[in-house]
Structure formats: C-alpha cells, structure tokens
Image 1: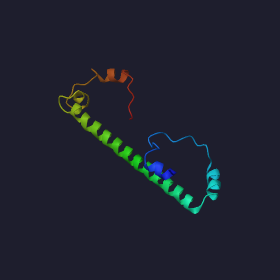
Image 2 (image 1 turned 45 degrees about the horizontal axis):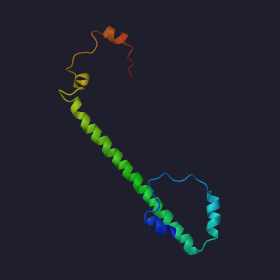
Image 3 (image 1 turned 180 degrees about the horizontal axis):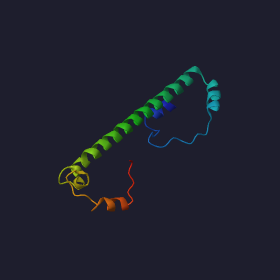
Image 4 (image 1 turned 180 degrees about the vertical axis):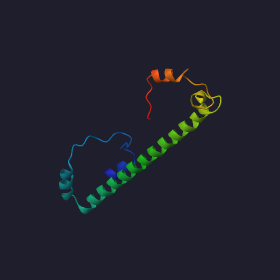
Length: 113
C-alpha cells in the first residue's frame, strides 16, 4: 500500500501534532531528484491534500472559537439585565459603591483618564 492510500485510509492521524522536523528542505529536494516523475507527482498530491486538510481544520477551529465566544457573550447578557447579578454594577440607577468621592479617591483605583 502506498503513502497516499494509507493517508486516505486514515492510517495517519491528523489530530496528532506533526513530528519534529528531522529532514531539511534541502534534503527533501535532493531526495526528490532521485524519484520518478510519477512518484514526485504522488508526493505533491499527498502534500497538497495535507495542506488543504490543515487549512480546513484551522478554519473550523476559528469558526468554533467564534461560536463559543458568541454563545458566552449571549449567555452573559442576562447578568447585566435588571435583576441580573451584574446589573447593579453597571446600571446608572444603582447605588454608588463608595460613600463619598474622597473614599473613592483613597481606594487607589486607577482609571484610564
């Protein structure tokens, strides 16, 4: 069974981290010179397939992260609504946290202003 067939049959698990680089690009190119045109094409096709898979997996991870962030933001909205755990911290109608401006200034809170 040749490499592309093993790759397609799932013998190579793409979920594992890539092996540590043990062969340099120069060595690979030198080895390619010793192969037939058909063997080179087979390697190119397999490498292209692997690259497409990597690109697709990266896009899927990015989309999943975006979905998770959106879900977290949507879940947090209820905490900022009236009756929510964080509503009083942000509502203009809430009681001041500090009794006076002097207490606020002495608390050592740094602002961006």
